Length: 252
Length: 349
Image 1 (cartoon, rainbow over the protein chains, first blue to last red):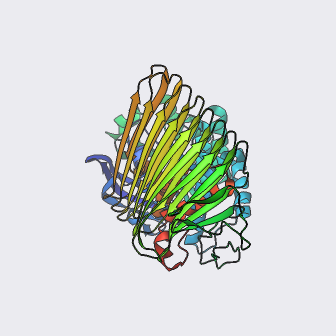
Image 2: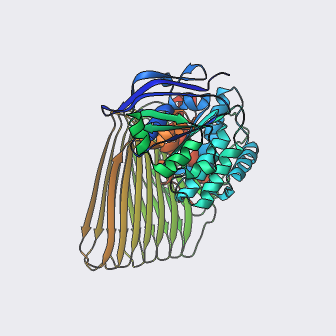
Image 3: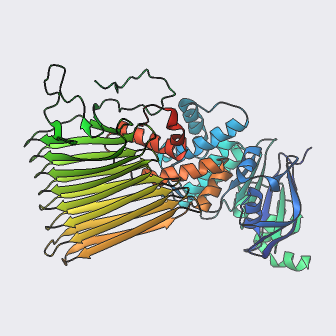
């Protein structure tokens, strides 16, 4: 089966400081990968680099996404190609309503596929359908993007956006941070409902907790900018019991 | 007779769609009020008439008189009379009267215009004025307006001052709060690009106690444009229980534009609530990246952010169809469509 994404020896720095020091990772359609690791290991940097954040500089390596050179693409081109990043800290955009934001995004995606923009009624129908996946009240749509949202509402909004854009690869950066148990269940259920044999998810997390709800096929442990361990889902339990030290020592 | 009649069936290429639907229109051409009398010589509206022999108009409401419909006064400079032009207008609102006015200024023909306009507004006790000013002139137009506004006790003013386009536009606004309980809200929006110069000077005097004022001016600057904002709030001695707020925010979207802002407070009373704030900033990179990561192209993301920034200065417009129209005009302006309006013989969005 064709690889969705193939990351080879990826090095990246910010302000001259190297954060990623040779990442290798292959994700195939239908797979769920989890990336775990202690603070400062480079988890969020990896997701930001893949989404195309310009403050990071890629110094070495390659990333191929559905046969294309991802690193040459702008953030919006990556989105059109089917990449989605769920933000750890979703950005608030005062004055831009959720409806306007998502409608613009969906219609830009459609434009890339030579489809006409959705009519107001078509958009509303699609929006209501996808809001239901994360149990969000349609009243959210008239509010400013993430403005005045609780932590849980922001993360639900991320998954709602993911549902609207229907990506081939979703990278969820610390989607569980700041969530209570109910919100965690809603967010995780949303992700599970969106799973198909054609798409894939990379879940980035600190804790094993989220992986009780979104069960990964493969777990990677990231430490100091490198993947030091790759194993099946049982690795999450071992990390939960023993922490990361034994893995760090083992890799030395 | 002028032929500026609203025709809903007009060609869609004429996007500007002047004048506003569901409003009564009057035209002022080169300072002269048009059609204020019918063919039979009857006065069409008893509250508006020519003001002085050289031009301008007088809008006058008697005590207790209220005009519910929105009156749109469309003032155009025409190529028949290029060069300098001075005239004065007056708005007089008697005690407990109410009016809603939309004043639009435009230019027809790409010749040089210099317009100097005096605008005196007197708002009587308990009277209310809802005034929206929309300025959309071409790049060879220099237009300076001196507003002098006097407000009596419990008078109310809501002023929106929207400068969409123009070579060199200056608004000097003096508001005198002369009677207790007067309330004044001023919202300004200026969009400057190319080599345009836009200046807003606000002098707001709290001469007596217990008056409220609020000013919000927002500017978006592109190209090599330069804008100035100078705002003074003066609170006279003994003008206790004054509440006065002023804020000016500028968004610069090019590397060459310049925004100057000077907030001043002069306070001679001791029991007051006053604040001022001024900011000059650029587009928010985090917001842009977030939007782009959802597939919104960079140009659309920038546009959305600018629209959101501008909207705060329009949101208080009470007439919904006017709010929609202005929101739409702001979007077209930010998309650069006005630069293509040359071919439109009625360049008067």
